[in-house]
Length: 573
Ligand code: HC0
Ligand code: SF4
Image (cartoon, rainbow, N blue to C red):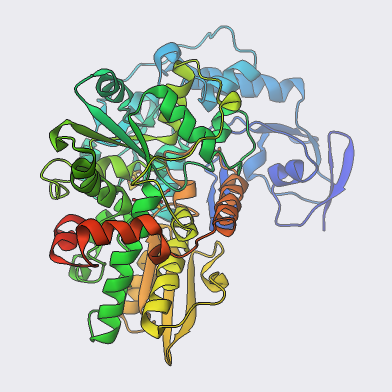
């Protein structure tokens, strides 16, 4: 192992390290901008294009980018020599020279890494003036792209092309005109973009942000004629606390509920109730397909980014996914029918708002066919980050909020619903129910360890009544692409596949508090989800009393005519 010296300290490091790795290994710091490493999912973005991580290496004429310089025996590195600091400052001043100066009204204000660097490097003036190119903004239902704010770090491109293998973003043009965008300057809506939001999750500036619906949500809350119900996705409760000073993985369910009440929503319901409902429909469909020679493998269908990916990339496999709608959409459909009836409210006056960790949910809510209630089932989707903005704007002290409970009849859920928020959870929840329905026996240990973890593709075998049921789990669309190709070529055989588009599942969704490239944050949210499940008195969806009630009072049985109409959907090429 080579010995090197960093800021007068001698260290021994593995030979495949870069100078940046070495600095980090001793707890040191060099600022970066384009560099990003999500080790657990095998992603590294290292174009060395921003030149922010320049360091001085003794005996070398030129400064070197720490992220792209391999270590070598005897290297003597100074991370913060005056020359290095000056070079970093110049690099950031050059980036700012053609960057819009509207920080005060930029949606990324306060979260922008370029802004942070300008502050850290004490940039109070800029002698450089670049050519301000004028690129057109692209606004979709989920994402706003402002290429004028692109700093060519290429992080979005790495997520879209390498992790998701969607490939709609690439660098175009030269010099001041160079930006990352879709070919021919197409809008994202006219491409195969899945709206997974992973480009947004890693963009350091305001070039890629979610489309906000905060104003529309305030308008309906303030409209006395509207009855506004809100649902919260499984992964929101383990991440929202980060916006208010809590450690990642802090469980904030009770405070989340009381914040929503203070904001003025009429009923605080839970997507988790609908996740249990999804399992009823999905496990029933799986049992049917398994026992009656139906189409296998059955793919889960609750991640809208994944559904759109499948529609674009594998149109010949549209029979594979379960026809069950996602929990978000099942919730909307029952809120405007079952709940409307029970509460005696005209569904036209009910507004359904979702709090989601996801940007594709914004797109999903707008899909034309998702109107089983006779109205748009889900009206507005806001992200965990947008909700945090609403809470801050309202002067609510989140840490001081009491812990409150969800409302009924759409607020009760089991541990099986909680684990939907992390990779492997939907498969595990489905197995908990399918096992008992198929065998007629009680499941002892409800935790299916083999489908847990962070491997991109995991395949587990579960014995159900003499049949070895093989379950595949993939997170990240590139991983599912590999799995589906193997299945198509007959290399792998499985009965059920769970897919989540985002790293780690919804806990790593594009609408969560920014993780700034730290995958540990996603892991801690996952652990929190598992803890909620472990502490729930009921951990199987079919045992949820409110679920039993909705079938007794309203739906009949899984896949009844009414259930089929309200809770199932179809897919399009
Ligand atoms: Fe998810 Fe969902 S688990 S996709 O990640 O299935 O967004 O959290 O709400 O709908 O329940 C997201 C999270 C959901 C849905 C659920 C599913
Ligand atoms: Fe690519 Fe996802 Fe971004 Fe669309 S939302 S451009 S698919 S990373």
